[in-house]
Image (tube, rainbow, N blue to C red; front, side, top):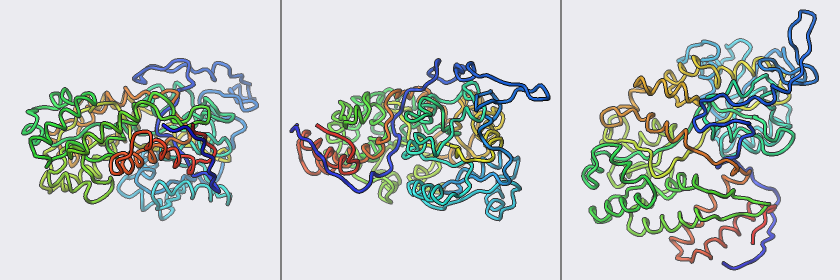
Length: 496
């Protein structure tokens, strides 16, 4: 690769986000998240006694279960904000014991006493700009929600987010959350560095969903276990994809898209995207480029872009045999790939873990340091992310793969049907969440998170397609093109 220094500048750096993961500041962590994490802050806490002999916080010290004295309480209205009403209203309903069927209308009509929900009604990627405007305007928001792609913008800004220990929430409260979600929620910069600032109620682990009928026809596969055995690493995945391509004369692609492959592949990075302010292209990137090119040339990976009609239609028409899907996608785009409940391919699918553990997406709850409803913020977060019974009920009623390994293990082991429509899309009503549980526990990217991850991920995938695959450029030329785009998007970064 040519060695050069790029020093392009733009007027402003675009919002960056966390797509890979950082190490947690806990003293004790486990792969499953089931063991109680050591509560270091609580051990160092000093307390005082009020006139009634009860523990209180003094000078903002941390006391488990109690809101710190420097966090305001007693406000009139507890205000939450998010980009749409897909999730938050139902978390409020679970917290308040309200009807799921009417909660959206109740909130829209301001009928939930003491609670206000700001529904931005925009796409997730547009929310950051809205939040910035709210902060500039002084809009009284207590709790708001950050998407994985740009969460770190706020998590690392201690003027915009509050360390959750200030609400009396400690490691013990979050002892069963999945480690990778905990890593994303921890600040890496500022006065809150190493502290838990955001927490998610959901885990978005992914897997590989495939047409069971086509897998039997072209690969001789009769079960998810047999499919997993054929694609449990990338070399085997390529081998299986080649078999399908050859037997169908390039008519059926094993994988849905370059983007789908990249969602999984990117989770294998061993180096942060940025080290000492320099963009790093590690060996995973070159392996991905070579893998996807090999598959692309024989139509073993579909040439469709994600989020297009062609992308999901390929599943209905049998041009695509499998999709990389995360927990939230099964009732959305993946159901569309079957043609809906009455579609031609409904009920023909199965799920296995795939070549590598990966996650895709997710949302984190954060608290505005200017909140005047610290107690409500604490109680809402506990209901959504800590309380076993509340999370168990939410997992089934919503339904949701909740961010609690104990809850999910218990529900999965009892063969819970989370949603009949989604479950019906799988052959033999496969317990599809059971296949994702191992991946959720295995995702581990400690020390990898940077504020630039989402942008660099997208730019790299674009360079691979346009330069390496379609443009016929060399690997070095592809990397150079990517780095040029990287410093255009983030002029504060360096490259060699």
